[in-house]
Length: 224
Image 1 (tube, rainbow, N blue to C red):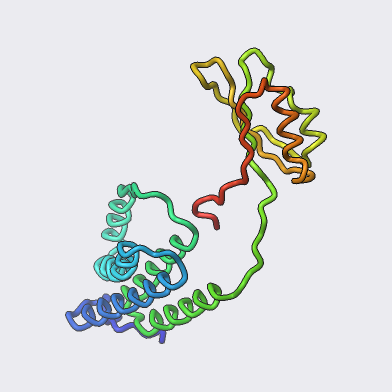
Image 2: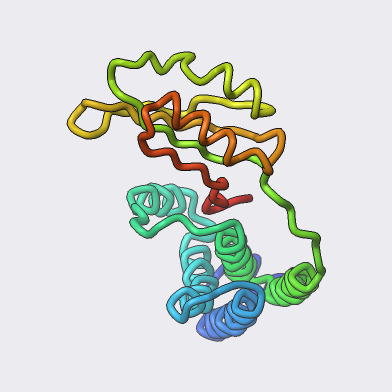
C-alpha cells in the first residue's frame, strides 16, 4: 500500500507510470464526484471539476517531484491565482480538499493508498450523510429598526430590550433616505416568542411607526 509505482532513483517518470497515475486519478475523481453528488446539491460543472482535479494535482506533483526549485516556482505561480467564484459551503470545501489529497497521493505514486483513502473517506461521507440528526433551531434573530435622525440611537430601546430580550447586541448603524434616517441592526434573542408582536408594537411607538424587520439569522455560507 505504501510502495510507490515511481522509481525511487530520482523519482524518474515513465510513460507507463504516468498513464497509471493519471488513469487512477481520473477514476478516483469520478468516485469523489459521485460521493459529492449523492451527499450534496452538486452541479454538473462542479462534479466535472472534482473528476479532473485529482489528475491536475497529480500532474503538478509528478512534474516537481524531486526538484525543490521547481516546486517553489509552482507554489509561487499558484499564489497568483484568484478565485472569483462565490465561496462554497463546508461540504464543497471538504470535497475539493479530498480531491487534492487523492491527487497528491497519486502524484507521489501511491496508487493503492489513494484507492484506500478514496473508498474509506467516501464511505464515511455517505454514512454521515444518511445519519439522521435532530434539527437545531437558531434562537438568535436579526432586528432591524429605522429611526429619525434626531433620535439618539445609543440607548433609545434599551429598556424595551431588557423587558423582552434575553440578550441584544448592536451590529451596525447606517444612514438611509438621503441621511434623514438611521437604520440600526441588532442581534437579539427573545425571552418569549409569543410576545414578539407586543415587542414590535412597543418599538413602533418609540421609532415613530417606521420600518421594523425581525427575522431569523440566515445560515452562513461555508459554515464549518
